[in-house]
Amino acid sequence: MKLTAERIIDAGMAVFAESGYQGLSMRRVAQRLDVHAGSLYYHVPNKSALVRLMADRVARQAYEAGTAALAGLGPGAGWQERVEAQLVALRGTIRRHPGGAVMFADSPKVLSDGALALMERLLETLAEAGVPAADGGVGADALLSHVTGFVLQEQSQSPAVAVGAEEGAALCERFPMTVAAASAFGEDEKYLRSVRLVCAGLEALLRP
Image 1 (cartoon, rainbow, N blue to C red):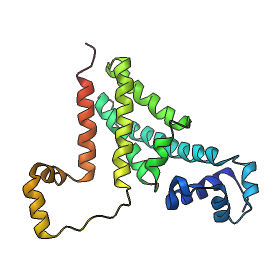
Image 2 (image 1 turned 90 degrees about the horizontal axis):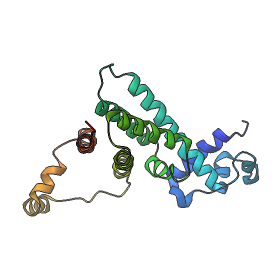
Image 3 (image 1 turned 90 degrees about the vertical axis):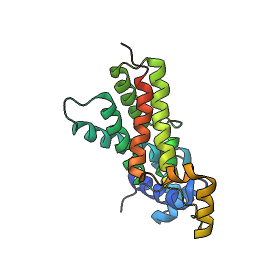
Image 4 (image 1 turned 120 degrees about the vertical axis):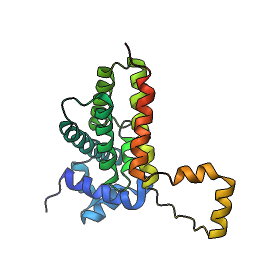
């Protein structure tokens, strides 16, 4: 099969999913493709360029998913619904890629066009709602950072600690509000509520 940049990105994402950033190398990508490492450099010059391409793929897919989600809204949808549609699509896209949260977190730093397009559209949504520009910039950044952090926890591979009945009861007694909050909602509902809380804060800043 012909070696292409797309195949290299596919292999890079697979290696990244298995070993993370530190384990990603052009040599390991070449091994996965069963080619000589030198043949990769014609398409992708180095590891940094590969990371940029990987991050950009995730961000572009998220942008396309957000476009579809926005198209599915009714004509009377408010700005909060438009924000929610974009961020639900973003979370779904990142979750489809093992290690996707880490890749997406890197996408603004590597100047991914896809990540910049996501930010631009979110800023436009907030500006159209009447959020002042300075607050909109911070708000959009907070929303995107929240998505990244939320999915990062979901994709964490740290082993869960087994808790016996006696220890569980002791934790409930010592930290009743924390335990209750942790079990109040499923992950999807918690995510939606968290996005809406940030939007509620932004709503207080709307210009008359």
